[in-house]
Length: 225
Length: 312
Ligand SMILES: [Fe+2]
Image 1 (cartoon, rainbow over the protein chains, first blue to last red):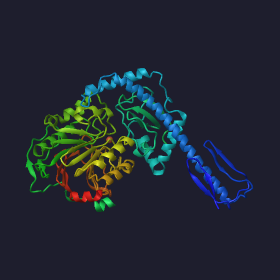
Image 2: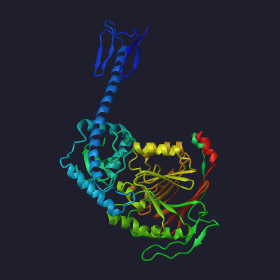
Image 3: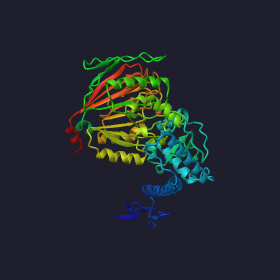
Image 4: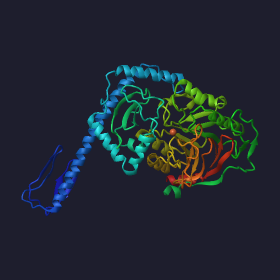
């Protein structure tokens, strides 16, 4: 005979009643009650292990949900910027796909100046709020372990030709500095950005840059594990 | 594995280094460059130069505007007289340093003016020194996109942005490759998935994402730059990888000696590649700043049927 215990997100687990537990246990989570063992059941190592596994699983699910919310909130803040910037760009003459260098230069400068003027109060942390920073740090740490971590540190902190770039929100990323490649494996895991916005490592920092006007939108420190 | 066994198999039929000896090689004399420029060897074409073939040049890491880049461009021009390539693939780092109007002129237009005047089209990809705004530059023919596809004859070309291979680009590439029925699929971008360079080396994170797509969808050849030398990589999973990143800069002696990846390498001077796709064969010739042929050969793919089988 078995007992079917409900878990959040339509996951179920089969509990063998022979695995007894002496302590009545209820695991409450934000998602609701996970497990409820009948009282008077004797404890065994197996049941404790099982409970621990269930607790771990539910914690993981919750953490995932929470991370999703954090990522979505971050993505929304970036999208809000893009909306503002698109509104400004719409009022400007459109850059042709067969533009001359001088047209590209003028367009970039105008877009830069207009967006800067519209965001005079922008400051570090507007987009990279603490929860997003923690999440992004964790994703980077998870992606770069062992040899990969050593390689990343060498590429970004030693070899990169953008070290020492002054980071000031709402100021341009210098066009003479390298546009350091971002590992695709990392880009697939980070919160997704609109096409106009780029993640970029600059020294130990992760920076958000607008690819057209070159403005630094925000940055977070201690990004490199 | 399936692809290797069931799909078309590319084979190097011939790989001659340094001294092309083909009886068909065309020879022309041309003037030597002046000043301190090195003496240049006469034009010796190893490519078949057939009427209906797809003919193009490959250059990488060009954006310096130095005398050496000009000297290399002169050799290109001489070779075009013998081999009228129609277009050029640019492998990124099109513009080192600033990107003002004068830089486009100095680092690109002035260098390749004779080719531009002859209506040769340049199709650029972006390197780690290139701003995204280059995609709007008319003479780079990027159609306002950081990554794009175009076709010539029986060949599809995929210009990718390896600086920023995000989900959008991965999805786009997957979709385009899956629908592509061309005989040849050629991808080009800046960072090399395989490299014997001591300074940089293979871009393994990029490789991890793009190579499975290339294998799945039958990409035949990949051109990359970033490393300032020439290298022909031993075929990997049935794909031929070339590095041609010394169009404007040279990292002398940077190719690791005895690298297991190297089929052929040249890191003593700057170079460019000439390519001719004729039916099921892709001929290549690599020429240095002094006009020497430093590598040449032909890659053959088996019949179309093999590819059709692979897609079943
Ligand atoms: Fe590069």
